[in-house]
Image 1: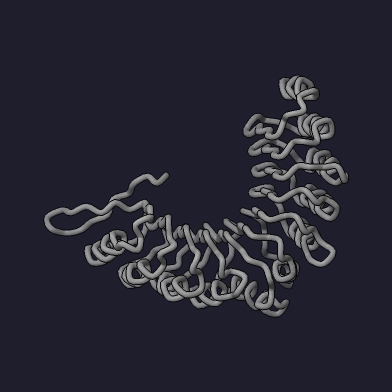
Image 2: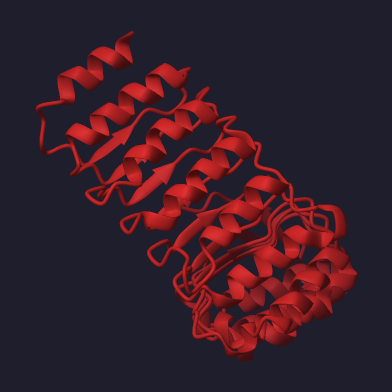
Length: 335
């Protein structure tokens, strides 16, 4: 009942720009109350309903408001709500007419094949949405019979020139699926796209050392030449994957600022390759490498790279220290 009273109290507050209601056990009726508030307050810029109990019915109420021409919301965060495919399709229908939304977070929303295909089609040029810049599909179910999901996703990514940030974290991607995605992107002309991505997350998938060449070819595409943030934590890239990244990042991603390779099973060979490449990536400002297999040799090489003058702005989760004349690395918090 508190959310209903809150929404009523805010009806006459025209200055409302941000509304955050995460983890409040809000259901569909609460979402409908929020939707009514959005109608009364078209100046609302950000709505965060993270971690509630909103289903497809609540999503439909919110998207109905956002489909209207006067809608002004720029950021919609629905992560950790069970909206499912039906809710995702309601979001997709809204995207076809909405021209204000720039950020959409559907992480862990139980979105499967139908919902993903609907979203991809709604974002496919030339008829699709042209305002959305940030899309989070973490924990979506990409696998589908005959790989139809990959076809729709690839066509969307190859034709959409507005998206700049994409998360496919925790989507259970394996090497062959990443390879298929890259092949389809190429087929649909992604190499000629004028898109310029700034952030890509493939965190917590199932990528092995064999995915290294695929990642190398992906990052070398023109659309990723302005990439600033790359998140590959919690995969199993190993030495070969790390070595591939060490080869491609200095030349293909000259603007990279944040690199997350935590917990990837990288050993000495991969870590030494990364250490040698780091001074060549002088745009780097944040490096996360904890959770890999450091030896005294790789610890020393990484510590020397972190101290390089070219990386004076670099922050890392690794803190070098010396024990009995040997360099070791400790975990440290990074702001």
